[in-house]
Image (cartoon, rainbow, N blue to C red; front, side, top):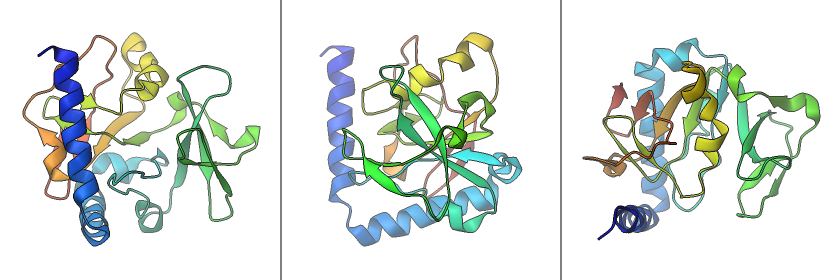
Length: 195
């Protein structure tokens, strides 16, 4: 089996496992992940500008963090200017949404709501799998890796990247690609990991 086939098989298995969780399990596990971050993450405590994501297809839900901390929060939006790139948009309680081409809700925004990824303190990232070396397996579109490529090129720590997932999404080993941007931290419903 090729490396690509192994990644796709792992992706399908873990997605199915996510889908099999009940809504209550998703809520309970997501709440525990948020509690791990609040209790153990100095990167979250120090951060003022934090991007996270709207969960779909059984993903762990980081949105409760918005109610747990007085910080500025942002959501990713598909870029209209660069294919397979994201921009980050500030949200608040009055933000309105519409679905993008993947049926993921995105904020309706004005230009002044956009923040450069380089100016974020922390990005809480969705994923399908992660390992203890900071490698991340996403949905396969490469949006985050393209949007954060500057981190590898400039060797900068900002923004810090935090993987947010159920404990079964933490796997033994993922093979990193040259373009993959590694995580700095990981949070599951059972532990918080600093790399």
